[in-house]
Length: 336
View 1 (cartoon, rainbow, N blue to C red):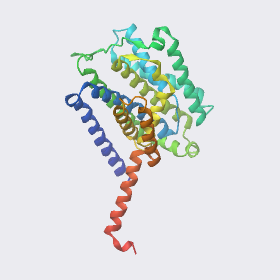
View 2: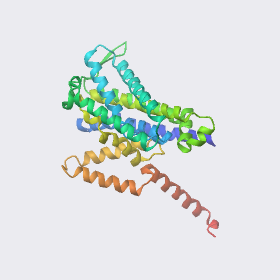
View 3: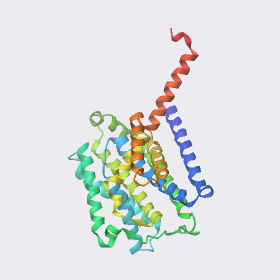
View 4: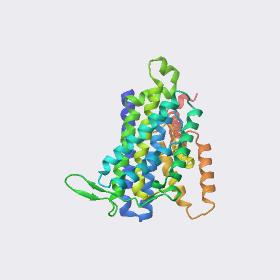
């Protein structure tokens, strides 16, 4: 039964991923550059949300400063590519991911041994504000004016070299990278480690009683999520070609939380749905200066209140009710 459920989940998630991928790949042929830019940014935000949900949905860790790792990844990539332009971009992305995980390990070792829950959330918020202030005052990183002049690199694959600054090359490269990151997160969540993570989220005390090192596994989820987010931030730097300290601000850290609550915590694709809905609302109200935030906030508030488990959770409950009604209609004798 478990094997059948796992196989069904894999097929469903693979089908959803295929649909998303086909839509993203075909967009440059069907829409203008503005929509393509929004779609590329959306792909990064999907990874941003999925990585945050790896912590919250799997091990119960709440981070209010996840944007700090997005900023660390973006600025580290921009700075390294400027001082060492000859480095292979794939090595830079890998190094940025390791840097994000390393910082998370240091923070996690100091924080998780002493605090959990709201205390851990506040500590990560403090980290985000520290990173924000540092980026605002370091001259080499552009201070409050931001880091400018970020170039899209050339990608050497041995048999050929691709100029990622040409046409939509970087967009497609980014879609491939985001797909690989999403696959990695899916594998972690649905593998042995993910099952351990889920047991911690459901009952940490029982998991510890069964011999699971709860703090060590929470630290792993924090490091994996942070490293993935750092790579997303590194992809963001050449995409936007400009970085400002605002990407480390606590308001930016609220985005993956909102994506997850909007789409659904329990589903792997919940943050992706939330990110898509938020992007549509943001793009649709972009010309309503002064009213955009009010409209988006009101709509999101209504959705969250109407669907406590997120949009996917609401759809799941609706499907369950419809299935029960169909079963009752098929067997009228059980009504008596």
